[in-house]
Image (cartoon, rainbow, N blue to C red; front, side, top):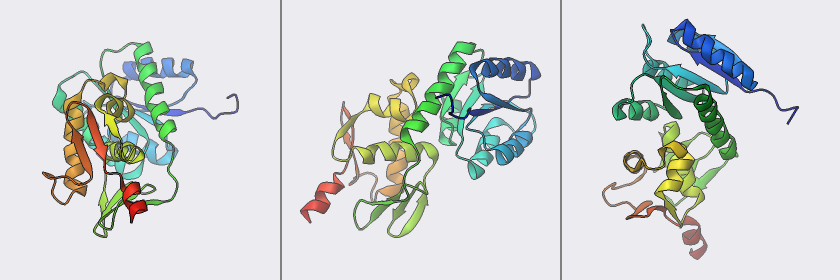
Amino acid sequence: MANQPKKTVLVVDDEPRMVRFVKMNLDLEGYLTLEANNGFQALEKVRDHQPDLVLLDVEMPGMDGFETLRRIREVSDAAVIMLTVRSEEDDRIKGLDLGADDYITKPFSPRELSSRIRAVLRRLEQQGRPEDQIVTVDERLQVDLQRRQAIVNGERVSLRPTEYRLLYHLIQNAGWVVPHETLLTKVWGHEYINDHHLLRLYITYLRQKIEENPADPKYIFTERGLGYRFVNFEKNQNDA
């Protein structure tokens, strides 16, 4: 562990006091900390330093956190935790939909922030970087784990980071029912263990991208009251 390189965290907030507060606590935790006061600076730091995680304020002048996140996702797979004074579900879903890994509402304690950062980084490390391979579900659907894309009828379909993580865990358990709570914990974190609405929303997104008829799914099945099950494509291939 002593030889393990330090994780780099970029703190993006237009309030200098907030940046100092977060940086001081992250330094104490042993992270390498970068700073940015607006979205444009954040993009430069992301391109130049490739941080492991970005703490991104939502309400910034000029370019807000949502637009900054959208642009970050064009150049980086770094983990992103959104910081906001608002806790409305629509804002939270919007951030997650754009590729955020978590959402934390101001004011927050140093302990809570540290816990969220560790949880997000741990989830990404457990998932790891997939090998360069393509999973063949059937002649219609393939999943490129390296590029994080679905291939539907030979056409590549981009997946947003949250969509990919959800599909990844479903495929990893193909043929088995994965409980709601397990998917919510694996994809979003333990804090979202009861947010079944969020899970249903992203299942809908995935079905719209990979199913021939989302209303009559052939890949992602709903097991009412339990969870979701991805088609057992390995069994189908073995039977063939």
